[in-house]
Image (tube, one colour):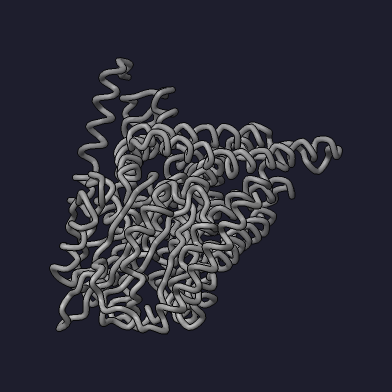
Length: 621
């Protein structure tokens, strides 16, 4: 057995490097390859590497990372649309295996305490195959959002059953009950309430992806530790931490790229290798009781999870391939099962046969889940690619900044918004005018007053008749994608007719956006938004070019308005593409066709009245 630490590191790195290559050659999922290599080099294989504290610690980080990534990559808008379905599926995914587990365990002659804990073990699952979903780029699919959202409920229910039985909840007094519930409440308050606040303060002060990565890893570890202390398990703490930090870690950000790289290439492989090293193949031949019990466990888990996915398919009108993906994601088992089995064995609830059979179940289900998820994710990816190809456009955007060199921020904005863009950093608004006058390309002027992932709300000012612009759908898509990436709430300021159109856009299938609406009868009321802005808000102004339906002569005052009233906040000035065949005219020139005399008089009167009111309020203060 090799004991030299450098040699062990070299062997592990070689496995991480070459196993994925070999698996691609023989067309098996990399997850299976890592587990098999763990078996071969472990104490129950060729005994190359013995139990190592470092490998176990890093492997546990890998499991925590998988749960963290699942929480971070939940699409906030899609989850808001499917949260009811996620809760329903969570109950399906826990209830069917739990009930089947009670019945099969009782038929095998176990007492009700053992049956209950076995049912909780069947009800739990581990998102071990989520990296496959991430690799194929289908993590935004509704089935994935529902499965991941339901995971939080299944893990919580399973671990609560474990905590209840572990602490002899049924036989204790109210003081112990209160202490358990108090710890869980404190865990939720710290992770959901305090951790996002701390991370946000840090990101505002040090907007650096490397230090941001370390902060996320630190908060994940603390959350896992607090969850363990509260009587739950670390994997639940990591998942809740991911959900809490979701909007602070956009999926297309440099920070997320660092998290994914380190996790997928270091932590997750080490976890899978560690799982393989724990598996003792010899227990298969230890007796017929172990084999029969393992077969019962595998069948119970597979049937229960398949029934949950099958019922979800018909309940939510999903495709067969989406059902397969949900089934693949939710029948793999590792961390939750290991926690339940280990604690059950240590407390005397489980015997040796259950322990050995559970190890066999983990090996088989990790393998089957990998194949099912790989197939379903690939099919969905092909469908998505075909849809994107059919919807593909040649739209391009020009993204600019004024009075500041912010090329990095402009590129980050384009990446988060999924824009095909060119960039320029201009010294004055007059330079912006010339660029806008040159052609009718869709354009954005961006002023980043704070890191974009710390923005809490997007206040979107939409002019009257904006929905009649031929390219308005692109502007709406920009807002929707950016909100989805950074998790910011969207508030539209528009008149009643435009609000009705926006609500229709927000309800589109697959393009859902959860938003609220405020009345803004005309563009001259846009300054009222400044009075409603909070510290972490970003203003988005959708303007238009002359001779278009939503053009307003007041648009020419936008540069001065942004500099005077919104300079302390991040803002976007968004201009739709000029309709083909029409000459692009600069919206910022002062020599535009003047408004009618009546309109000008009314505007002057309104400005005079507003100015008088503001002066009176200032003096009264």
